[in-house]
Image (spheres, rainbow, N blue to C red):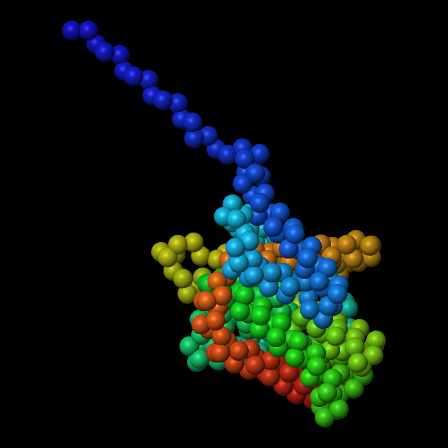
Length: 345
C-alpha cells in the first residue's frame, strides 16, 4: 500500500508587526495627546496660575468620560503615558542646580527636609486611618510634599494604585494649591514673615512651581526668586523619595505576585544624572530654557494619558475623604514649614 505523503504545514503568517504597523496602531492616540498638550499650553498662557500639567489631566478626564476618543486611540495613549512620563521626569533634573540650592543655607534646607518628611509620613498615616487606598495616600503625600503634579506623575509608576487615584491626587494639588495662592499672602503679616522670608515660606509650602510664583508675587521680585529656589530644593528630594517608595513596594509585594518595582527606577537615575549635568554649568541658557519647555510638554502628554483612563463614577466614590486628606496635608505642609522657618530665621 503506497505511503501517503504528509501534508506540508501552512506557513506562519503571524509575522511580528513592522515599524510602520506599530506607528499606525499608536498614531490615533498620539494625535489625541498632541492636540491636548497644545490646548493645555495655550490655556496655561491665558491662566498662568493653573499649570499646563493640571489642565492636561483635566482634559484627559473629560476625554475619557465623554464620547470623543475612539477605541483605536487607547494603544497610543497607553504608550504615551509611560514613555513621556519617564522622559519628562529625567529632563526635570535639568532645572536643578545643586550650588544654587546649597546657597539657601543649612537652616532653610533643614526646614525643607523636615517639611517634606513630616508632610509625606503624616499624609500617608492619616490616609491609612481614614481607610483610603494606600496608593492614593502615597500619591497625595508625594505631590503635596514635593512638587505637585510632577511628583504624582513620577511616583505613580512605582506604587500600586488605581488610575482614579492619580487623577484624584492631581485634582487635590490643583484645588489646595489654588487656595494657597489666595490665603498665604493674607497670612504673611500674622505669621511674621515678609519679603524674602515670605518667599521661603511660599517655596517650602505651596505645591506647584507656578502656584509658588503666584503666591510669592505680592511680596516682590526678590521673594519670588527666593521662593522658586526653595521650591526646587524640594524637587531635589523627588529622587530619593521615589527610590524609597520603590523599595517599600518591593518589600510589600513578594516575587510570587509578579514583577516587582525595580530597586531604583532607571528614570530616577536619569533624573539624578541631569541634576549633575545642570550643576556643572556646561549647558547654555538657551538649551536650559528649551528643555524646560520640552519637559512641560512631555509631562502634560503623560498626564493627559493618565486622565483619559479615569472614570468619574469611581473618582466620586472617594471624594469626601480625599478632600479631607488634601486639607490635612496642606495644613501640615504650611504649619511645619512656618514653624521651622520661625526657628531658623
